[in-house]
Amino acid sequence: MLHEPQTLKLTMTEKAALKVKEVITKENKKDAALRVFIAGGGCGGFRYGMGLDDKTNDGDHILETRGVKLFVDKDSAQYLEGAEIDYVETVMGEGFMVNNPNAVETCGCGQSFKAGSGHESDHSHDHGTDHEHGSHHCDCC
Image 1 (cartoon, rainbow, N blue to C red):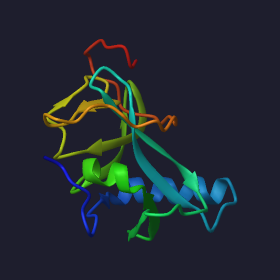
Image 2 (image 1 turned 180 degrees about the horizontal axis):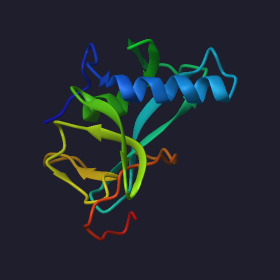
Image 3 (image 1 turned 90 degrees about the vertical axis):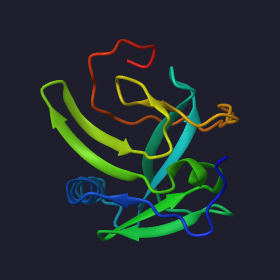
Image 4 (image 1 turned 135 degrees about the horizontal axis):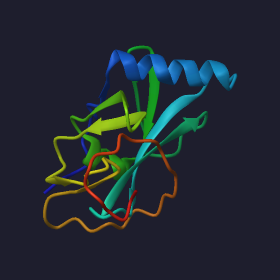
């Protein structure tokens, strides 16, 4: 059973870090962090969300990787422990992708995943993100 980690381990590739820094600069939000979260939805039950944020919430994990500050809420942390954020470019598109060791099943489009047994999709966040598309058809894409 997943649990909230005391110290969250979430990493980011150099390519993803450069893309986040580029967006922060383009949007002139030099003090912003990348908020990474899990929301209910998608064909796997959960989906990834990301967006720039300049305020922390009570219980947030605050990390820094490759010069990028990350905020993760305590409910999402259990699903993101040990994950790595990457930025991919393919003929089908480009976007952020999460390589997540906690996902027991992933959707073909990369937007959603299924966690281990005993976890229902009860997250109420509603944010979107870009992801690489695969060949599997699903309700996400």
